[in-house]
Length: 77
Image (cartoon, rainbow, N blue to C red; front, top):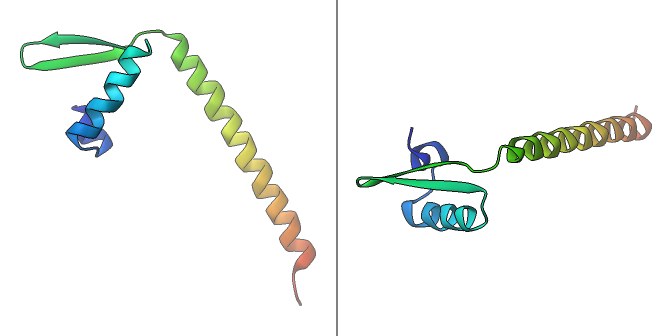
């Protein structure tokens, strides 16, 4: 699948992001003919993403619990 289709980004915007990620060493780029193929350059990126997503999930759950508690205390009968 092409990245543009998967992300819904325009070609120019996508190219800018891919260039930044490639220059940062996060992605590697393999040109083939008129196309270019990208892959994650460092497998540790997957672990980093998993840690970030887990932490965000925890924060969302904590906020949901706090909101639930707050609503139960301020409910008008």
